[in-house]
Length: 606
Image (cartoon, rainbow, N blue to C red; front, top):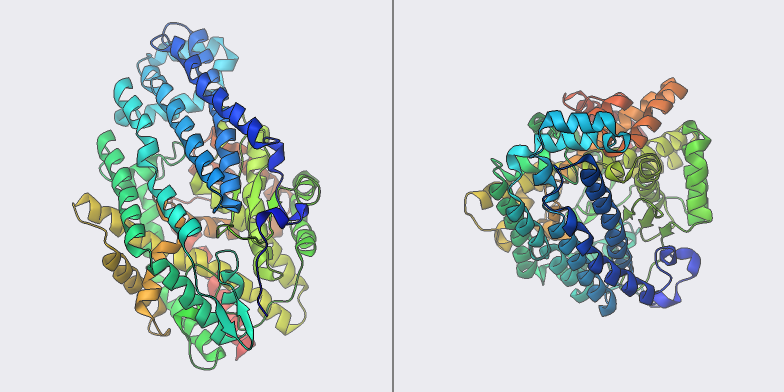
């Protein structure tokens, strides 16, 4: 018996997202692309005039914001389609065209921020006092001032913006190699043939038969290793491109730039990053204890194929079956402490508006994400399997999407995004809330163990894998900044060493296949993103506990946090919710939650 994936065209409509809400057809998209390219000229008349009058400044900013939204919608349509049908050359071409349009718009708007920084602060303040529409940009102007030492002339900014397309192409190279060209040998077991693909490997890695898990893990690793030199070159190019930009702008290091400016002006203190890595290393004994218990529960042997770094560990207890529709209902119940304001739009998105693309098909890329813009649905990408892990992924991505929903619905375009630093708080918060409900209701020890297994999957990814990758990533940038090279052998060897330290000798290691894990994380093409998963899960669990213990006042604080967007710095947004990430305490609290679960795990498995 051979399990095959259908082509994209054969998926039932209810398993796909509503991209038609963006553009009814490819023809409509092409018209919008042409309009986006032509609209670049609308910014030209304002050049050199921003300091002349508040009207000129306001019109330039509003024009830029409007054009960015329109071009972003063009990009999003191409990106969503390419994710679900990566082997289709039409979508690859569309994505390249859309990326080029964004780069042209960025170059055309590059003069705006350098010009704003030449306007005397007293004049800018007087203009905001006189014009409420311009006063909306107050936090933006204040944040821009913190970047003043690192903003270059209009000419240099234009070059940097224009270079964003070629400098940003490394991730596209990696994506093409991974999602379009990479193939994997199938797994054969007991008369069945299981195709290994990005969309199916997660299900195979939690298969009850160890032989299936091992063969799937090896096939997936070997498929990536066949492209190791191409992917090493792509990752090195991405790291070098970011290091070049940091140096050009005058930052001391790539990390310094990433902490200061991610998608937005973040101003994250270096102590937040350092505290995370120090607290993680101090708590490695908790992970060593977990691996030791897990090895015992699995019969005395634990192999790296049983704990894949890019997916859930092989379960000690099987997950109960749960359909997509059933999971949606469970998640809605779990989020009820936030009230109707939160649950009702989420329910519409799940059952009526088709936010989620959850079917499995040929050419669909790996992973899960939430995407959208002000004025669009907060789309969710994933591949569904009937288990608690898929429900957890859905809850996670719904956390992102509801964060986006409230931010975009509350804030003007300039603040309708939020920092990557706080993005993982909302997603992990949903998981923590749903998990807490399931554990409250769980009477059967086997079901309770299955819920804990899902929790360990979450914590494994965010408080084990991601901090390890953060250590790895910091070494990559420091190596490149010293003039070193990132070769496939170095990347593989070093990552295997870091994970071996985390396993504490409790896991049998296939060094090359384990070390190839750097090829499984597109996150590494977003500089210094991975550490924010760990800070995010720590803050999320603390906030979930506050809501469950203190009720409506804590829920209101959390909703205010979701609505803040970029109107405040991310550290301050979390303070609105009641969390101070400049201190080690939130990460330590995250490890306390993990320790408690490990203790219960020990009691359940003996």
